Image 1: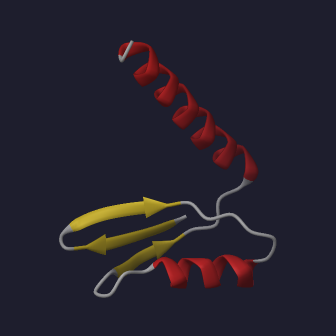
Image 2: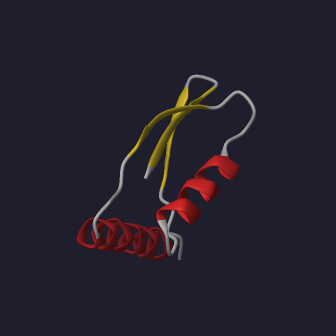
Length: 67
């Protein structure tokens, strides 16, 4: 997971890949001009699974609410 600061706003993004070099390359490519990296943390599989589950449930709730 990469945490960045851009125009006073903090953003977090999760990247997945086959190797750490590939993930680092994707993280570097995703940076916008003027965006500053605050931290980069390697997440274990259970944490990534929990984050994905949370996002799926949040999307389902918003879909139900929008009906």
